[in-house]
Length: 366
Image (cartoon, rainbow, N blue to C red; front, side, top):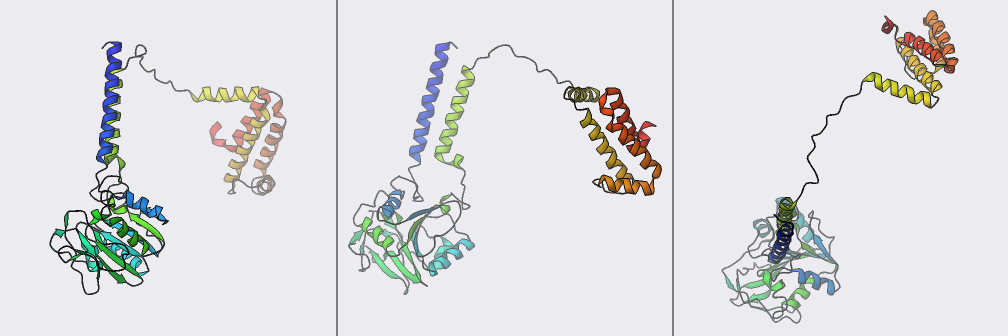
């Protein structure tokens, strides 16, 4: 491959990688679970920004299912299945003063049982507000079909569907409330400005003061699903781009010279190591230090022979040796004196070190 042709091929691979990233990023705009992190028509990022513009503190629950302190409002859109423990925590949070806005195309089984929610037959989404609680809301909808709620006697209808069932219901539980939205799309980006959908969203957030939170934990960002970014469309695009660039570099790459066989490392002998250390000590004037190290090692070895601790004070060691082994005490005293005066020459240093070593390890010499 010629030089110009190689660079052209690498440029084409980089362009293809960029197109792949853009294509994957565009695909991420589709959000069937109505994520607040998506800018697509069926995402709810506009609802999150809308809450902030209305003066609410906005929170996104991602890594762990940590609920905001009530009073607060929590939006849950099309979640991955709740566990029994999470369902119990959510129900207790509502009774403590939280407001749950649950918008799901199909009911989660555990949430439906916990909050006594029931759905009917498919009907047009377009509905009419039937309560003064929703100020300024007349009609809501997205020109599609959904499965409306069949409210129980304890559940109030906020928005009535065209077929006479309920598109939005409310039920008080303890100090909080549960608001069921049968058509999540009316709160999504593509329909938030349709009819009175935006006013409905504002009224839902205004029912409870405090934080407005969005549950992304049950959209795959927490234990409820795969939080591996490499499995997301953008991550897959980046991986594909990196692979293409790598292949291009392999095809275009050139060697800088002939390949050299690695040379095995030769081991050093213990004698060479000892000689090097001795040379360093000699150059640094470390004779006294060497004798001190040998003396300390001898003292620890003698203490062990007498059944004492290795860090016994020198005075205590001399006292015990004088009582238990007088001959050993005399030899150690003479060897220590020889060591004190043995730093003057290499020959005297070697003789003192040998005598101390013989006292510490009497079997070694034999």
